[in-house]
Image (cartoon, rainbow, N blue to C red; front, top):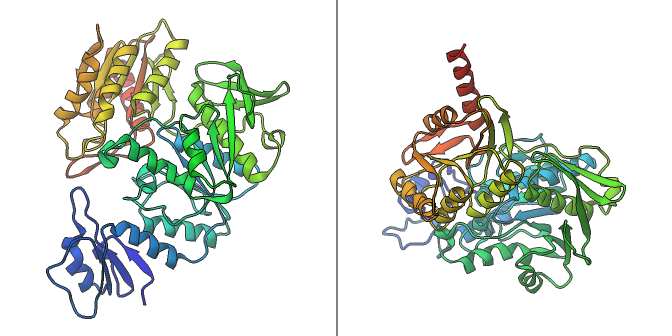
Length: 477
């Protein structure tokens, strides 16, 4: 009798189904012998095998991940009844975190699995996974634990990898509701084409229940595609911010704004405070607010019961220091679109200050986005420090070259410094800046490691910055 699904031969037991996955660097087929030696009675594989042992059940399928999802779903038992998926190119994690906060404020115990956090009913903690949507065995283990802990509502960050036919991590789930943030383009190293990337995102709409709901911005670029993909009975809920939209479910206007915070008016007497100035964070908050209304059926005035209902999210426009030796902000922005919105926002409020950006880009991932990231930084910034983000097995010099192409395509582009070691790069950027400058440290945000070819470097951007600032104080004491 089998009761577990495993991608690791080392963790296999006589009750395990071993899934042989062909990864970028590791091929699970090489570990089938070890999985069988550890007792695994069922092997799922995609390639023909040289040997088939008697007494072992072999399942050949072109996509073993799809079979893994089927087995995980069948073995899981009862799951929470209200699973909410959140997807988009940017803003997924923040929207998940905001929605979790709002539901908690409404006294609804809910699970959360985002890039940043995990809460299975035992309290909110940092997510242990490097993947925003973990593989099916970890995902179903999480959902099962949520149910066992009495949670009926769970928020899942649903990535294009997890939603895709190839990834199939989420393929057998039914969602009670979904939130779509903005969709531009990313992960083309995996999806190959923009069309397939969009198709993967649309799988979330397809998997929303007949009587479910989907929250989107009123001007969502793929609204017609969602309408064509979702079940006919699915409610499409829209929101608008500072836009002349009439037929929307939630219409808001900015009542007061600084570059670090924003107050939104939902009615002349109902205000919603957001601990961020950029409009895209306000959109994330409004999406979460409308989803809270869909879950609870409560009026907005009963949801916004606190003066400041939302708390900041780790690694998102996180101000570390002001004027000593400069204003330092950590942000997770890692796409061309996110760069453009971030830089434009800072410039709109700090037009007379120098803007310095420090960033890299993930190795062995979508090279298509590198040009736009470099071009956006060159367009808005006064200096650029290029450094490591997650080089993995790709030569850092190739990453630098790709980013420089975008930078150098901008006439009169700013000075560029290339310092691969991220700690040294931050130290050099601090030395470069003056008290009136703004330094944006981008791409790592909340993450706890930098991935190299053969090792993982423990990392905490905020702690590194604070340590470097302390060293500067001692040096100048």
